[in-house]
Image (tube, rainbow, N blue to C red; front, side, top):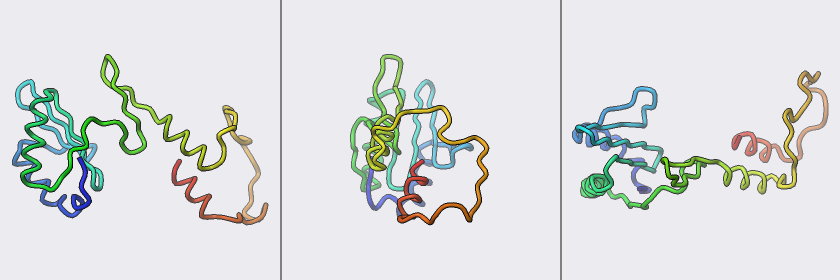
Length: 148
């Protein structure tokens, strides 16, 4: 589910979740869970995206319906890609992979034909800020480092 207006609604989302029986997950403040007997709900909020899962798909549909009554959200259906992670259904659950992210990254940096190596540079180089020449495009460097 996603909505451009959700980011401004997050302060009112928290009371809604608490009223719906959700509790924050201490190690991930943007995550919450709810347990009602054997029924388990998990929710993750990231900027303007909400990721919901439930141990019973029919109950998930019902909960999504209750969220839609309060918030202007759009149900995007089954999860395929989230935060650079591709999610593929598997017989034992899901397979999480960043293969597409890495391939897109290599294409963007024009490194598709690069070959892997265990250590991409000398382990103990003698570097100095006075060595070499300034980068022609430091923004591209920052973008690449930020993507990593």
